Image (cartoon, rainbow, N blue to C red):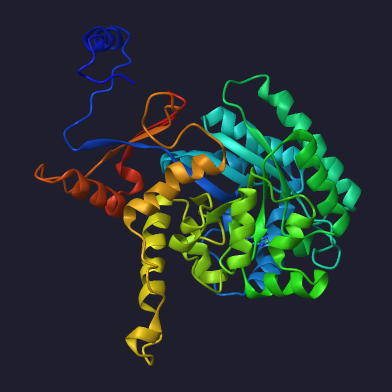
Length: 406
Ligand SMILES: Nc1nc2[nH]cnc2c(=O)[nH]1
């Protein structure tokens, strides 16, 4: 990065011009950091926008598990993943934290698509070995298989990384407490420690999930994950809509991050994540699309929903209650806070030096055009309009680690 007051500015500019690497912005174009999708199920892309009226466990059994089972077919995986990565990059998403499926060959296709199209991926082989909560046709055959396959994927991805500068990171991925046996949770916790890798799972997403942990472990969902060594400073827990103050203290103490998925939460979350309260506990927080619990691949859409949901939490929704009983005071977040979640908040959660445009940070960038730019606006107004009005077609260029990928 070089300021235009820097004495070297003219030389750097001339060199870029000579090398044909100079990008000159139009008056209505702006550069923003690339977005980080902190929670997305890559295999669920074909179902985006489907069956959102069903409760979570029924949605999983009827729609999600049958689709994920199809990734046994590696050609199908390649077809979907090639399309998905290009779609996400076109939407300005330069890094994503992915749930894959139980199949390592398909998970490798996801990693290859990230490398081919130029996205930084964090990718998890999904572990799900509890025969009581997973269907026969889509489960790890045992806890040992779930753990061994996870370890195999770590090695496979490390090998693939020898071929590229854009490293893909393996992630320890117990689907969620109900899908796993105590033995697989233990084995995955051990792997996280052995390889010092990120961990991802779902935590307290719904009343059903919360109830499951209490009934089967006599503990809160977060305490179960902690008991098995899965709440580390590299852990990202999706949703957390029903976490309580005890859980917040635990997350804060262990430096666990939350992936806030505001669109998905409208359908499956049973509550609104109180973002201000979470941030006040100094918990790292980013933004996720949760495809296909969320219907949209766009983090712009999720920024908007994060703001809207927070405002509904603030005011409340039951019009039969008096105003002072209706909502939760202090809940509304600004669009700047939502943008922070989609950029720096995600970067901090993944321990990445990206998410802002500054010296020493990775050049993960998007160039966007503003359609209703009348050149008379303050910076704040321009920013707000960009957040609310940018569509995929307005995202003209995307860069990952300085390489143009759109
Ligand atoms: N939203 C969501 N929640 C889950 N909990 C367990 N699996 C899933 C999933 O695929 N999506």
